[in-house]
Image (tube, rainbow, N blue to C red; front, top):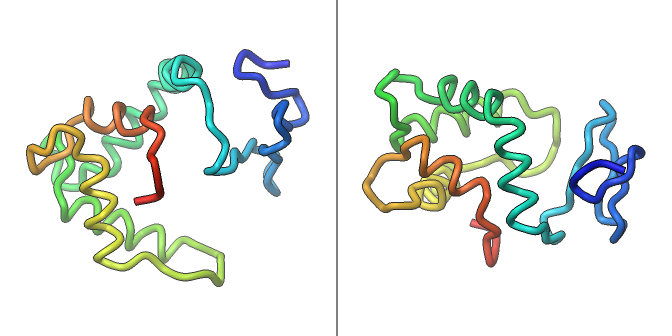
Length: 124
């Protein structure tokens, strides 16, 4: 069993996790995790999240702006193999608002990591 309550086969104790086709663990959105576990996992993956933030910072300003988020959403749409709905500019704006934790108009790395550890009351 791993430190976050999941067994090695990807199932959580409440049965809400499963392995995707690559063997990665997928946690259902409705599942709640202990905030301390989330912070620990974020710390464990801090290099990956730092890299992700840098990749999304298309203009290399050190912060993510609304255009960076829209471009990221467009890339997700292009890369997606799902036949499900695509993200819209409105969705990108909603994601931006969720990630702009301090409501400064840009997403700092602190905003980014804080948003990743918050459990939203509802999807954006």
